[in-house]
Length: 313
Image (tube, rainbow, N blue to C red; front, side):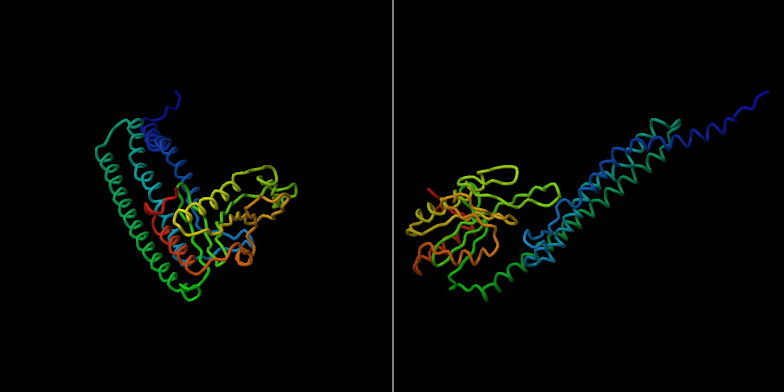
């Protein structure tokens, strides 16, 4: 007579399988969680200079870093929270397929665990939002104080002014520099240099009239944007009856070695090194004090808020 497996042993093995096999249903949630963890540093605010490779320090940089970490925490809670919350329910649904007997106490436990995880997720999201609000308030206060302190080195009567992100009718101009001898519309174009066979970056760009010859491709778009920015400034200033003010378009290619094969006309193409000294030494057309003050006031109003009277023709 052969040896037969006792029914309790088979029942014990089936009981283990009833709890192990439902883990298969958690595989898609686990894969999604891995993707979320891999993308948690996607929006990192740390920037390095294309000139020396050092980390750029902006006003209130420490608060900016804390705000970036707070946004990363909000991203993780908002993305991983639903995955963790749904895990007990998904596992319970798998148990329904493999279990021989159903226990209402077990299903109640799954529901209670899901509810508890959902409450924890809500509290964490509320905490993240409150932290971001506090950090944004602190950042705004530091920037406001920093702007006031800048008056020590750039008082109201200073003849040089720089306006950032000046809105036009359809886009923005990166920087508009007002000097006593003209206005410069500065557009910044970021391009990633390709690598050569040795793995070294090829950072030479050739200006050939209306085209830029990069290593491996050519383009006209950057020059066209700089030309449009300068043209818009001229039309806008003329529309504001600010006189015949000289405007020079400037295209900056940080990190590139610029070679001029054929001048691009009225556009300056530079790499950005010593840009302040270059603009100071470039004399376009002197402005009297009254015109200079009106131009500064008009650009200041334009940056702070576009009004119907500021629209270009």
